[in-house]
Length: 175
Image (tube, rainbow, N blue to C red; front, top):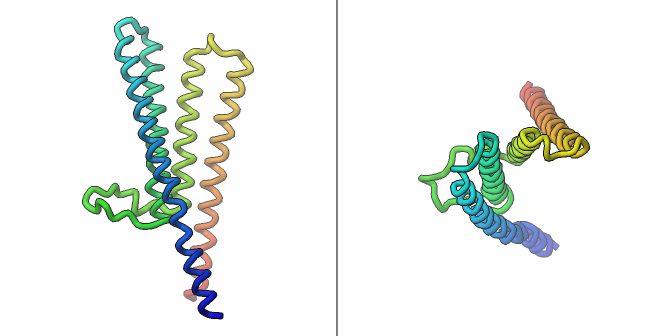
């Protein structure tokens, strides 16, 4: 019976490697995002001489938006792989500091913060082009952003409450 239990546990433990292709897919998605960013940057550069101030600001905001999405994908790749599959040992010398500090709770907060930042840029772009949006669409963009803000707040509060509960439990055990 113990051998069967060990076999099942080994299968379950090694099943984490099923996630590896997902992360490879995200790396491919990051490459595709880079291609899109390059196309957007090239188009922006070619039109800069005829662009007005608001078009320049919107163009830069669009590039920032793509960078935020790229950062978000990279955070998910690194943190997800390290938290759920295996430690990344490929480049200890060049390892970003945050990689060793982001647990699942931190990953959720970073994801939500990035989504709120992306949403805020979309909202700003909408209000800078207010004449191209209907009142209904502007309302929806605003409502969606507020929902993201409250979601971030809820995730942060639940993580803080969880940490406080964990800390008080540890304090009680030590006494």
